[in-house]
Length: 291
Image (cartoon, rainbow, N blue to C red; front, side):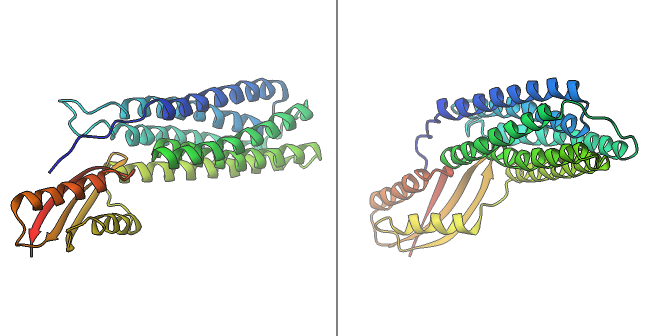
């Protein structure tokens, strides 16, 4: 049994990703200017992190736009796999960046550099912390609303950036206090956060692509929805997996064996519609088992 596919809400997720591109670009430009002026290794590392954020924002914007396209003859189940694929590409670039920042931090431990215009460095890092806190809250809410792994990745990355910029700020203040080795240590710590983010982002999106089963909590929620449908006596089996960032599910429902065929068909359709109305579910396939 099948029904009409959901119509994706294209405007709002794409607007959110565009905001991410704009804010990350502005932060990168500001950090780059102050980095050139000051020579701060910690800020240079944070600037490179901002550059990776731009790449991630652009990739996620493109993926969300493609993933929200309606199903067509060549893609009967939609384009949902594009978004997790872009997440893996972003994770690879983020990992490469993390190793580069690690290398810079290790070199900084043995080659101290004088940092100038420290008030400017402190200022841009404080601005970064405030902006990234806003982005964390904004994209967390958007990811829950639109069930988007891309927006969730942006929220997690923004949260990590708050910590990264805070650590960079500590390193710069250490230099101001003539604790010269603290900048190199700060860069190394920043690289650890970047590498961890790359690993987490890659793992989550690989799970989406290889068809990982949803959580037990989601399966229970689906079961509760099915059992509320009038005429359903029980559930014999539920098989569910991710197709991109959405769930496809096969459900075997138990119905009274004495029901007329048309009535059994109507109950099955009601089950399908109820399950497909859930935000997480893209497609539901219902099998009717007589009891």
